[in-house]
Image 1 (tube, rainbow, N blue to C red):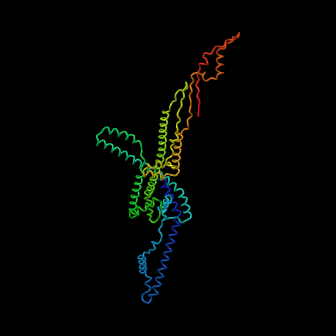
Image 2 (cartoon, rainbow, N blue to C red):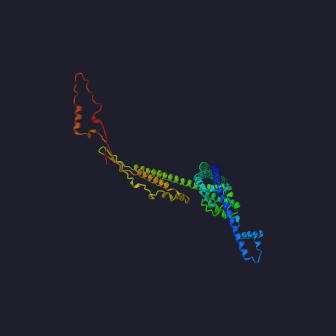
Length: 447
């Protein structure tokens, strides 16, 4: 859809620029041709006059004005490489010329072989490119995404087919049912997992497209293959030196090749971006996995230390349970690679992964470092503990051993004192349990 809109926009631009520039160009061409014709006529008249003066006594000067002599002069001009028709500029602002100029605007190539000369044309150029460049980006994004999905489908199909072929070949050669059973299960699970399109495949497709397009331009423009490759590379990089330009009709007819090349280049950039995002997600997952693994390891160490906690003996009927304090400060897990935490994972990366890491934005690298430092601090808080308070659990044999003498005597007097009976009142019943038989549990915390 985006490409169709871009084609319509190109035709509209071509018609607009032809309407603005063609009248001025035609006037300029007619004026240039008239000036050249007048200049050539003056030069011939001057030559005839000089020859009549120098050869008036030897030749018939009237022959210098003959039509045959004029043809001889024209033949001399052609032999010297001067032709009035070649000097007069050709008309460029045709429909194909306008579409060609519009294409060089929104692609930002700008060869410079055609340009506007009127004020209206310059204003229209600014406005047209203002809307044309974003439209090209949208069109390239749409076609590039479709091309990326197509290449991704081809890659996944190739991987599935190659795995199936290898599995069947292994089964045929080894004649083993167990091997088939073992390999079948991973194949079923891996069918649902799509592998990211390799950058090498995208670059190879771009090179093939450039070589194929260069061959097509060789056929239509009569260029050699090296010149065609050079032109196409300059066009894809949007450098547009203008030293080599195709015919306007050819460029418009083969516009889909240039647009396709830009789309393939855009697809390659998208593949790089996808690999960078995958690298970012992989490092995040590695940080989380390392955090969980370290926490589990520290918990295991803590459980082993708690299992070695000793119980003290009994002393005069008092049992003391003394948990041994554990010092986890020595197990602190500080980042081993300094403030830049992602360097910890960079050592184990391949060359391509390191390249993607270098191309990663500073914001993404900052997020990774912050994630690494946050998890490192959480590991430290989880593994470091303050010196535990030692609790003394005291279970008494008899409460009377810990009561004050005055309190003990009062409780005995209350127990032995007779209860006075008052007429009209119900006597208070005796307590079911004696204070002397009660047992209490005290817990003292000591630092």
